[in-house]
Length: 581
Image (cartoon, rainbow, N blue to C red; front, top):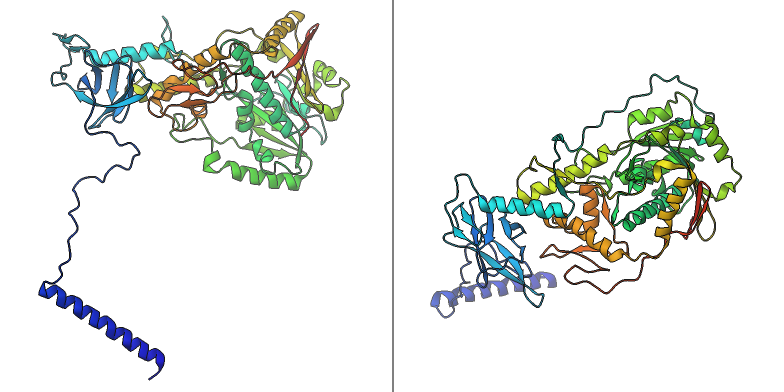
């Protein structure tokens, strides 16, 4: 018998003897196995870092059948919602629907938070219970706790610029619907411009026009322009960034060309953006999205095609779809991919109708405008001019509408109200999405020229009159000076986003979530970041802290423009940013 076979037989024999010995010991009672303890019935133990206590301090409340409650007399009212509590405001709270246990947090004198279980008092089920006043003979249909919660929510939200009372004679719709644009079918068609023509030959004569040296220059220009607009708003006490230009370029899918190969050679050269009118809100560019189009010069068709395909595929991924999770505007984020290649350019439109205004030219072109031709022909180093914008005379007197953006913000506020209260927005309330009044600057602009060098950019803005230039220079001078009102502006901004933090309960970037829901992004003028406390949902700033615990004054934010000079109807200033990329 071979050696491997002998080993196998020996192993089988040893296993047989072991099993026989185990059976003998068990049958004779010499050894008995110990049974494991029975598993407890019910849900497994919580894996949360700090599971809610089953015993300990409580908060005694009176509650009604709608799920609203208020602490009884003698209990603290400085309370923050915990598990099982949807919201607490103004001394009133609301339970999560279906919650069997509820917990809140109470802040002690040392600033530490103590968790308490919500305990409903035995006599607290009467609808006519009055906070702090016991049970009274309330009238039929009166629900003081629920009505008190809604009144407190209304007062609190209104004080933070979220809601306002509807004025007399105001229609139920806060923002009237926008009529769809009409195609320029009545205009006389004209032949497409020849290859190599000025991109202004593709633009309608009544549309504001911005020409960029490249797609990179377009994004860099949009970034600095939005930052200047944001600082102008901050000087007026408004810490909001509506990101209009960046959002517009995103809609035009310019990142599809730019992000596909950010460090390599481009298949497209210069580009231009054409706007449908000039939306103006209190002197600043309109909020949110606008109807617009773009024209890109194709210099390498094969490379441009590959970059476009790669970029569009990248932008189509779920994380770049433009439709975030829990989106309150699911119908407002369609993919904007209306594109058409003609000769040596590609035309892109935010909608098919506006694309037709560019790709199927009709009526006079901007290139035939004598004022544009004179300004565009000013001698300058072509490679140094990063951007040139021109507003035709017709566009200066016929500003566009912000109705679509206003409706977007209104719907976002109504969405938050429903999350918080569980009821539709009351008919007498209207979301207040207006901005502080500012001097009207944009509507009086004729042109903007940006010329770059190794250390930054020189910006020249031409206005319709010398008086308009003087007003603009005064506003720009305020931006050029060290900003000393950062703390107060930041405090107002924290108050503005407090309802979002408590109602929507964002888990990550509060600023980005605010941009998703309301269409504007809160920006600390001193460079701070907004964060939300995971328990209390309080909004704090990494530069300024909170109202209860302010931080030491941070350094003044860096100046984004310098050397503001007025010359008749023109204003010049310096942007200290490297544009040579």
